[in-house]
Length: 123
Image (cartoon, rainbow, N blue to C red; front, side):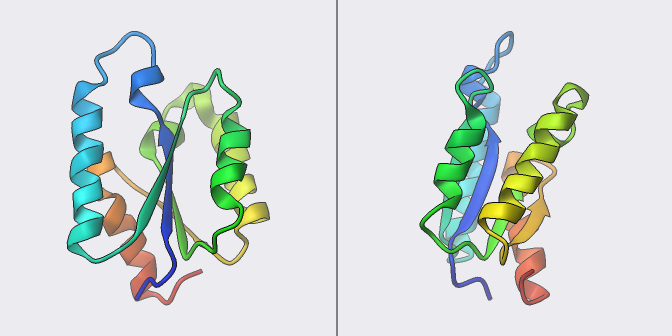
């Protein structure tokens, strides 16, 4: 079982231009509730691409042991963010080398992504 906090890294929906953040914010809230249902501690690092997201991610990874880091589908599946996604993966490897890395399909299944790795015994 996961004993250290999980970190979820994703895009801040309020900072993405050109679309309504409300549905994504609601999905994030449902995802947070799923962590609570499973008794898991989860921290969120929601970044704005125009505000030094890499520094925010390093800060979130530093100082706390992470059992698992979930990288959100908004970063992973949006083709123009491929290079940013690669940088995020490498930041996790560098700053949380013992953490399992998981990927969600939506903000609602972050807990499921983390639990997949808990069942395997971590990274």
